[in-house]
Image (cartoon, rainbow over all chains, first blue to last red; front, side, top):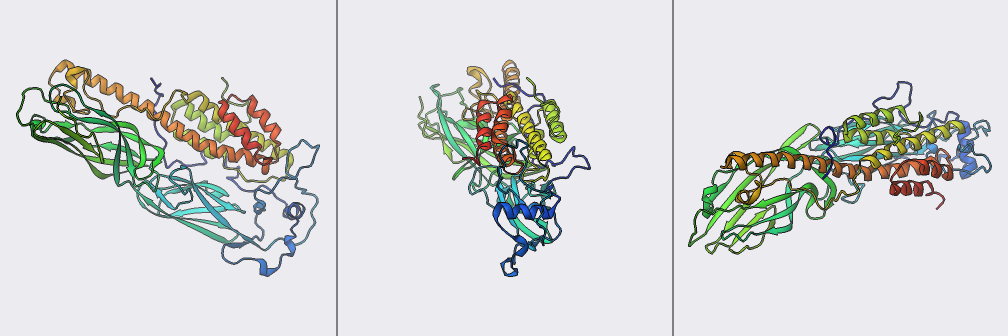
Length: 344
Length: 189
């Protein structure tokens, strides 16, 4: 038995804002190196590069940015130089040992993206599920980030930020500006559209009346994005029954108002796996024996998703039991089946 | 178990963790992870300041992973989730489809038992969902923390040995401790 947390185990909002509680004087991110000349000297020491003398031809065009008087975050994650014996642990930046000279004029910006969810690959995909989170990194500078088309990026300044896709489908473009240059990345955000099931266990009871069922894992697709940030609800719907099952006609498949979440696991050809298992079971009617058991029971169940305040019906899942004259029954749902369950 | 590291945790991280401790809202824990990683890659000219920042970063991660140690259930099995719908209890209840609206259950005693069972199952699903989401969040935050710890060596100049000492004294799950120690030694390897 799992222990219930105090708030009922609320999930993770996809639209949370980073930076809560930051004091106004605290920089959101970025390089704290103040002495540009010291940094140039440091680069020269570490990499053997004399940037102050870099030829104009070497400066790339697209994606490059004039460094100008920007903070020296272009140093990025430079290799640490061991000093030996000094346990201060700081980087070997000699902020008093400037070699002087001119700063580099250009720097190439590199914008990369990686989804937080490890599945599906590749993690630099630009097609996302609603609410998905993506780590964006800009090298070698820190920049100012804005997003158009929905979603959010937090923090708004920095070299490493998190883009959160909106709760509704759309196209979002994230733009980062650094040293007067911009880089962009455009994401296509989609909602769920399919439900697939994978049978785990057949259920067939020897009660002398037709019945069939199975337990299944549930997947929400398509499988080329991750839907771990959505919740799923089912609406109420009445059973439509014929023949042997007619006594169940109109019986409601009760609404499931509590949204059930999804895991981060994505299975190829299926989609993102839902938390929990579906329990598909025909029940049975034991009021009469028949020579011909033929009949059907059908639920057309509306499925809805919710994400970051947005909700929408995205599909109707058909749950059906068919029984033939001999009483052999088969339950099907989401592409999975109990197989033939003979009367016993 | 101490879940804070005597004053060196970033105040914003501490605030998010305090909220999480109070409400177990995983969004607060997620935010703590985002905040703990937000200065990754920065360079500081002052070695003393860089060292302090690195130590604070380690304290942040230690505090975050102490929550995972406290809240993750080692017995949690993602392959054995609860059923999202159940049938009314007992042999008589098996005549009904799982999830049938209780108003269609004719026997009033069975109906009441079914309503109780639905409520219990709902709690089971909520508790299981929390652990499932917590496990997933742990995976995400561990990856962030590994990069962040490696960056503390690379950008802030912390010595791997010092990081190892801090992590070994922290109250973490052994697997998290090992993963973060490996990250601290990433450059050396």
